[in-house]
Image (cartoon, rainbow, N blue to C red; front, side):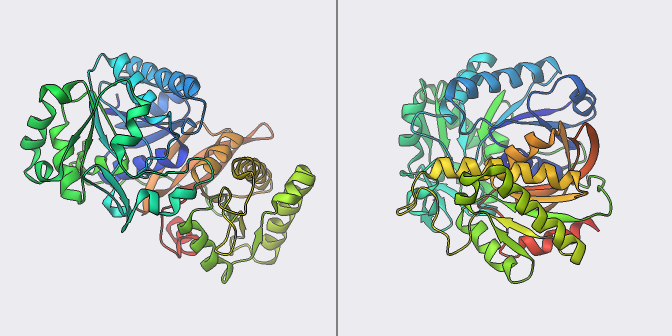
Length: 425
């Protein structure tokens, strides 16, 4: 029976948290959607299970319904402690879905309130005075300001949450966190905090450990993957889990993210790997033909040199970001690209791909769904929040082993697209 169950609002977020749990000594499985049927054995054999939903940008009613369904299935499997995982950049719209989902999960559990902890210092996300920083920039002054689907125009988590929740929004300041777990626990026990969503400051890993210790008795916590740093699995916090590999075979990189970090990764990789940009105009003119052209490019590259994974990308450093000034219909373009890259993924797996590195949360969700994967077994981390995972894809009615690395747009070093492959050997 899993000791811990988590509900993640996108696919890269799920593998992000799962990667952290593996390093903390949890045998961890990610289920694609609500665990049922064929996922039962995987859940039963894990110390932790993370349910990957595609709810971050879904209509609020659907996000709530899917999250509650996941919670009920996990409770039925015997889980008693829960973790609602969202992005460390708090990606959301003005009305959701972080607040509404947190409210619904608390109501389902009969719990009055919980913490809100998006900090993840290892990836440059810190919270001070309830304001979220991305490295040295406030959230609303970072590239997230012009995200095509969830533009973040405020850095104050209290102001972001207030329109999203029916609960009061409270704050635990940094000086309390620095005083240690007992001080945080006492602050969370105050009457004004008991029924609230409480934003907790954190700027270091030690802060996250203190918060995790203070919230050990809560039935539900919410946050980014960093909060898991303070958890200890059955192997004493020393992770050695490593998923088996899909074996020898070609690979490819499918990058749908327009984040600054991913565009830098694309820029680096284009000098070392064969690459092809996705042309949104070509997709609009004829999606099937454009996808066929991208797939032909990759398979031609494999024939020329199967050891060099080709890169198919939506945005590079010089590309106008969808949703920014001078780029119309950002959300529509982003979804069209996701659809195209998901179709590319299924065609490439049918053509023999054994390894796919996918960049972007929405793109990763589209790819995993298209591949018909039901569970991901998490291996050793590649970088904070990123790991290779093994799955069985279902393409053309046949099960095919595939290794997937699902990368949040903002994660990873500049050389990730070129160095990730060494971990498969």
